[in-house]
Image 1 (cartoon, rainbow, N blue to C red):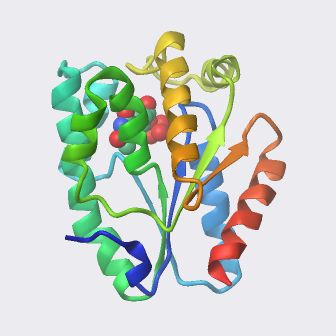
Image 2: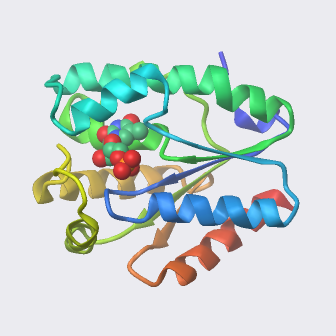
Image 3: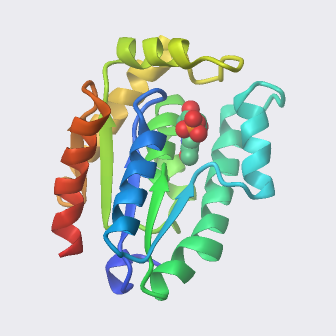
Length: 206
Ligand code: TMP
């Protein structure tokens, strides 16, 4: 169906990383930078604010108990809805879309917990981003940041042994897709990370 975001006038950028890597901070900084520069840009995130995304949030907090397979399907369904209702219409209008997490989150998280091939299959209709930016941080750094910011109950994936596997999956997946994915060292100050992200984004905007 939709197999190439290059066909749209807008560019699609996804920002990825393990919990505590700073994806939300960096997505917002990039969005503000693009807006200030006069680009037409839309900020979005996964899980979404749709009903499915809200159900996923409850499951992440452990308030709904779902198996890893059911959760994988929910993430994939939320993503398809997101892609059809928001991402593609914006890209078609020539509006750039930046998403705090997209399909690589499912490959890395669900793919490290259950059958990776099946996770890829149920995400077959996701749209390959023009550029995926993977922010890499060691798990001890991610856990320290999560503890420092903690306002809420621990989420289901915030465990060292899970995050180690997720990080490994992210690195492997990004290496496999070098022409569309860049690894950025996230174990630095917010502004240093932001400036490296800008360098990569400028290349696809010009
Ligand atoms: P966040 O909103 O703080 O980034 O948290 C979302 C959590 O959901 C995070 O632990 C990553 C996880 N997640 C998946 O496991 N699979 C997915 O496809 C997505 C989008 C997120």
